[in-house]
Length: 407
Image 1 (cartoon, rainbow, N blue to C red):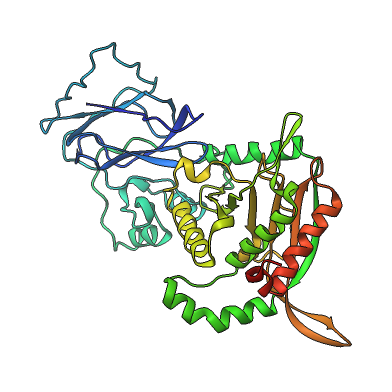
Image 2 (image 1 turned 90 degrees about the vertical axis):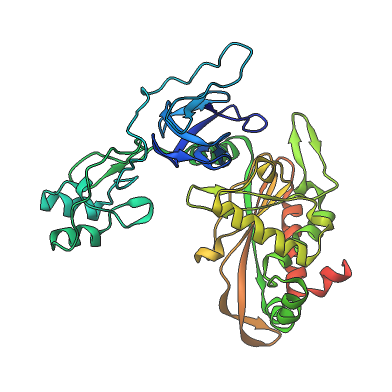
């Protein structure tokens, strides 16, 4: 049975083989994930179509493949490849290294021996063969403790066994530890889109600051009741989402886009929420956010963020979006100029809440303040509209009742 690259989604025709979950000779169960593919938007797992034994890997990790390409073969329990029903001509396999075969039921001691600079130095200084040490780190990686245990005689050498198909490894360019690592497909796509935004939009950023006192007080007052009723914590993001939606309704140009010589205005808000993951930045989309409650927004944003970090977002989750919110404050950022997410025309940057002395009437008080930044496409949004948008967001956050009353 052939393992093929499935349909990857609209406009996506190729992917990179990220990693194999099985080695040649290992048994697989029907519907069990066997290989992971990475596209410029998401990563997805390809399940086994039947139970049997992985008899060959045709395309190793790190190679690019197209939809329909054959990645490997699954055979019966005796290691014999089973035919793939196909009345038409067989698909052409993606070119790659020759299949690697080992005896059934034999597994390598570790699936990844890529070394960190510190571990590499210890291995080099001790003139040790790293394949003889059993790695206890994530994915079988060696840690400094593993190497030290081997040097101290506390760890017996790992048995010499066939290694798993190679994954993309860092290439050491000199003896001081510099590494050259190929960009992931997602990282390359993010880089392309960010540069595209700078090249195609007349991007400008305007700033304001907001007093978080009342929102923080509301969260503290209603947190227990909210969580008890809805099963989710009341966070800041739902307040800012609602504030942005109110501002977008008043200033529709911020929610619009340019299509050729036309301006396309939307009567809905599909809110993008930027999420940082190990592979790079992704922006899952909360559909029809303008019709959702505080509780729904909190639940959906939490779910999208979790699936983004787990790598389980679908293409639909990342498609579209009319306006984006990004929160650099979770990383400690005090101020930044966010880059547009094309073809959107606006993005709001939230930042760290910082106690600062603020003039309140004739007195000076210490208030929890946050800087806000709106980056926008000046081709479609005037400066007065951008400033007004931020003022409306500020008013809704400083007086949360406005959101509920729609004023």
